[in-house]
Image (cartoon, rainbow, N blue to C red; front, side):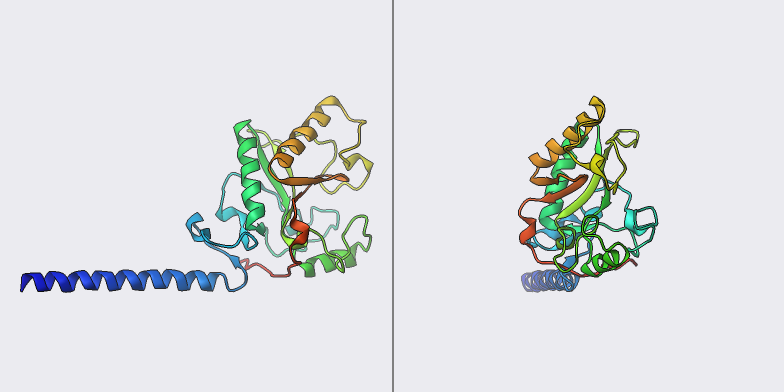
Length: 230
């Protein structure tokens, strides 16, 4: 009789475990409904396709965020994002974390200005500034719209930005990596940023020292999902 009770108890435990596993899987399917995962644990990302959109804050707390387009502190002088979340494709985030870990080991960290940008936001920006030299034409789209671009700078251990010669979104020759009429310190800061980003699978945009594209990200589709700000 005792053996029979133990056997039935063991079977119940197995059934409970199966139901729990099924609940977790169903929960992940729900989270992935809009092609991005908004979870609280790195474990939730295991087995997720590298092209899936994910939130950077769910992977790492080692970044500084100053999402300019969620404020009026940008060249548009207008807030175009409802909130300051940073979403990118999983493969972009992996490389970005690797780069940041290398900066951290040297006493610096990445500060982020912009990440994935929905195509509708790109259209709105182009309406405000219809100049393809400053804003990518939404008909063609940008790497930001593909989840493979990030605008960033570096800060030191005290949170002070390294001097890069210009502000973010400064549109002029001084923003170019090729601009040479800067002090040795500024040129050294730009090279420091550029070399580690390139080492970690990013490609710089020559006209904007702050803009980096994940290699091969131009092959990804344009996207237009909106993240939940609640």
